[in-house]
Structures are given as structure tokens and as C-alpha cells.
Length: 267
Image (tube, rainbow, N blue to C red; front, side, top):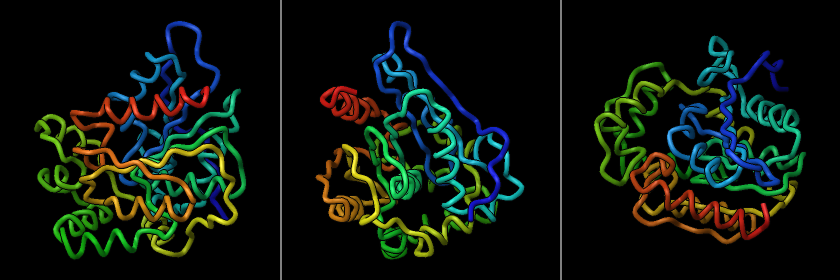
């Protein structure tokens, strides 16, 4: 069972200057991160396009409480956090979720519905084992550094670059990511490795966009294809981008792909 919800989760909200479109957007971060991930580009950009755009940090992440209990936090706790934020919004949002957040969104859809869902470089329903084996065979040093982060150690800047980016990235951006990186819950990582995986047969099926990137070191296109196959949805792979597509130099191409999909469906 999930732990008791913390008293307040960090929430960043960007509001359009004029009348907002009818469906708000809620952005969900992945492992080792927080709501900050979305606020450099995506939140202000989507607000400028007319959407109310919000992002929150799971308990134990970013500016949310619960860090002292981090390793006890489960995927079920993160699902409860997402459910609490959605329930507090006056209009049910389209949820846009990245990496671990995508798996949390899949779990949420087992018991709740949404007007729409976007999975970005998401952990597939089959969990992390495939991605872990890919790292072990192709980039073992990246896997080693990720395990160091879980243990509370700072990663090497070059490993941050290789794990997150494909396009050239400034040292300033690497240092910004480095400053925000944090350990992830060991229990949540175990849940994603097989102990609490999504069950596609139980999931609600709102309109859904599944996006991956061609040069993702953490969730490569074959893993994104697994998500599409399990959910019976087409998959779109963005070229020339890595895992942190919202921070890449070409971040706007991914944002525009999402915005086009939202507009086509009247969101």
C-alpha cells in the first residue's frame, strides 16, 4: 500500500496570457529528477501556445517533502501523488510523462481515466530489465554511474551528457543538470524491474501519443516499440535527440510534435 501522502507536493504552473485552451496539461518527470526538468523550456512554451501547463515533483523529489523516506517510496506512492494532483485540478488534464513518469502514468491508467496521455521515452510495461541489459552490454559505465547516484554519489559530468543528450550541450547545461540530479528510490527501481509493473489489459485507453528518440541511451527505440506493441498504439521516434528531449538544443521539435497532436484532437 502507498505511504501517507505528504502535506504538499511542489507544483510549478505556467498560465497563458490570454484565455486558456479548454484542457490543461500536466507534466510528470522521471527518475533522479523533479518538476524543474520541464520549466526551462516546455512549461513556458506550452503556456505561450495557450495551454495552462503545470509540473509537479513526486514526494522525495525536487521541492516536495519526503526525501528522508526516499528509499521506502514505491511506484504506488508515485501513482498516488499523480492521482492527488489530477484530483486537485478543476479540469482533468492531458498528462505528459517522461521515462519513469511514463510507467507511473501507465499504472495510474489501470484505475483512472484521462482525456489524453503522452508517453515520452517511457519505461515500457515490461519494465527496466531490457533497458538495463542494453546499458550493461553497450554502456556499462553509464549503468555504473546511475547506480552511484542511487547510492547518493555525484555522477561524472561526461556520463550525464552521454546518458541524457545526443546533440552538443554546453557545460553550463551539464552543470545545471548535475546540480539538480538526486538519488532515486531503490524500492521504486525494484518495482520497475518487475515487482510492480503495469498491466496493459487493465489500462484505460484514452487518446495516446507514444514518442521516443533515435539516440536515447537509456530507453532506446526498441524499448519504445515494446510500449507501442503492448498498448496497441503507433510509435513515433524523433531523430537527432537523446533521452532528455525537453532539454536538448532541438527541444522545440519535440514540443511541436506534442502540440500538433494535442491540437488535432481538440485539446
